[in-house]
Length: 251
Image 1 (cartoon, rainbow, N blue to C red):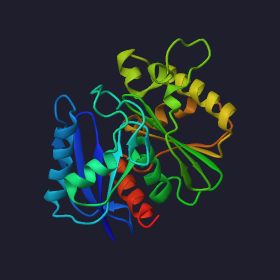
Image 2 (image 1 turned 180 degrees about the vertical axis):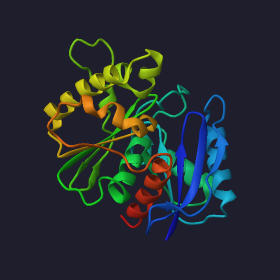
Image 3 (image 1 turned 45 degrees about the vertical axis):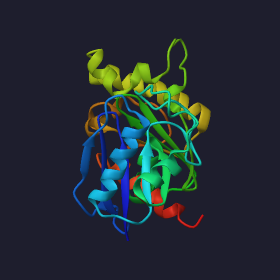
């Protein structure tokens, strides 16, 4: 079964058909630059264009950069401050733009669903937390394989820190502060210590572009819980969104 997954990002909106037997992309990704200003009508039109590119008529999963509840935007989209999104039922909006049933999911949750369905979390029970280190810190929370949506672990405060922890240990911080791998790993470890204390997870999966270099900083972790690198990277958002749509059909 091939399902269309779409990942809405700050610089691009990209989609592909996903083979849900394998978790692999069944087509090349089709990417369109995110409309400047991130207006409601422009983003809707872009999503509709992606669906038409694939001549697709089935269920669509869309990863969205904010908290989502029943297709309704519950927090300002990350990196965008267009006032038109808050409280809007974008599930209905994008269904109208694509003429398809649409299932909305937070983008970090989508990456987590991909890992739990096809990657490092497949078959794992208990409490699993997925972390994405990038411009910010995305996170997903799963209990016995079931998603508990909209965990914003990057918005936690660490002891003696005056701002969100993602301002302290997101992937971009290593470059901005010219941190060594050792110092960066120590920052991530401080975050993981807090995660372990609050949630006692049985597994933490770390993704994002910087996870490719996990061997350079995972050695700084002192937590007792297992921490492993993500197996899906660039395609995780698309794969997870498509998988979420397939799981949601008929619910």
